[in-house]
Amino acid sequence: MIAPHVVGILGGMGPAAGSDFSRLFVNACEVVLVARGEPVTDQAFPEHWLAQVPLPDRTEALLGEKETPLPGMLKALRQLSALGARSVAVACNTAHAWHEELQARCPDIELLHIVSETTRQLAIEGVTAVGLMATVGTHRLGLYEASLGRAGIRHYVPSAEEQALVMRGIVQGVKGGDLPLARACFEEVAGHLALRHGIKTLVLACTEIPLALQSVPGHPEVRLVNPADTLAKALADRAYSQAGLFG
Image (cartoon, rainbow, N blue to C red; front, side, top):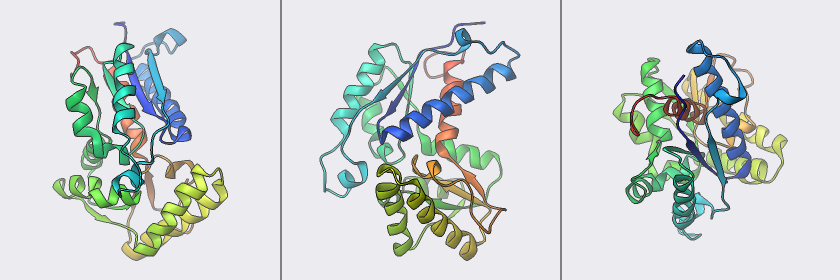
């Protein structure tokens, strides 16, 4: 077996989402090992570093209410690079607003893109329409909307009132340590999207939403897609890749 590459995870947005992404990554590595018929041992897992960095709120930064998180993210990425990371995943959807600049200023690493990875997987599965739950910042930038549109996938988003509930679930709920509140907020919005648009796939485009939303009550047919899971699988593939840096 060829030794896996060193990879990194930029977390801290918030800390619970970063820690959960590490769990998803380890799970994805185990799947790769089993698929290759290789023993699942402690030594078989890749060296990976998690940078949990306190950063300004990404949505508030995009709205001009807080300073940019770019300097903090750059510092963390350079530290991950110094530790030998060849590929890095950012455990935050909204933070991908700075993806292009981060990649340009850190050319020695491959910075995976959560939106591109998720859209590609949905297209492979033949999905043609999705509901989309994300932060105000992610919606305002159209990160997923543009990517899904290019892939020919229709997307439906919450109303203004429903979006306020999503943000309450994220900020007062998950970030505030009140998971029952978060679950109630997310389930209400998810239920409205399912009923209004008849969707069968719901993309949870904020790494904190899956921490509280496990299903859509009354709509067992709706499959929840966690982009962080897709990104973790992509990072695991990079760790075990036998190709070059961007192979």
